[in-house]
Length: 227
Image (tube, rainbow, N blue to C red; front, side, top):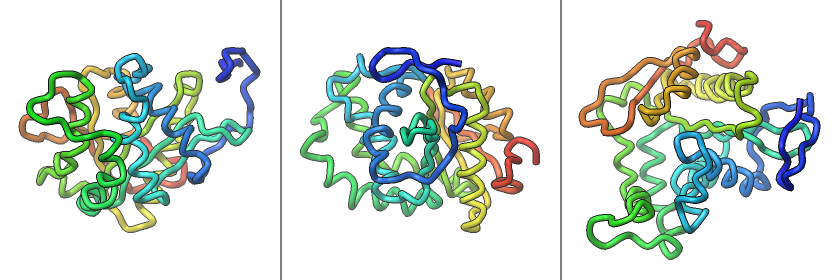
């Protein structure tokens, strides 16, 4: 099988791809993966003038605040081509996002004044509302996650492997359940989560999102979706 490299050439895919813990030198790759999957699973680079906006919301704060909860799919040559990241404690993470992360990125992404008038302003406004992640309906699922893989690495079992690694790490920390939020329109992602044993969690006024959750029971041994 073949993949398209960053130079645009097609090269043989390695057979030694593996999931490993995040390293600081993966930071740029995490940002690139985030940008290339942030538009409902598609490349979002055309939507936002600053390519750092989506990573500042959905990837970089996790690597900064809780790097031990970040795992990447290594292509076998050291390059991250997918990730799962999140937090074991959403309420604690939100506090760190507010007090530590926002001050680090506020100069680059100033808070919009008044109602957002563009997509960039709408997403930047989310940066200043981390408390949106806290809902009482999710208290029984204290951890949360984001998972993304570059297109060439999807539908090959690596998403399941990433998820099993992350959920197993949560289980080892004594975290009993996890949740995630996804765009309801992303039916392919919903099918993936359904296969992994996630179920829908009812929350008030979800807008375009659906919340899903599952137990961490039976994870960490390649058993995601089989418990």
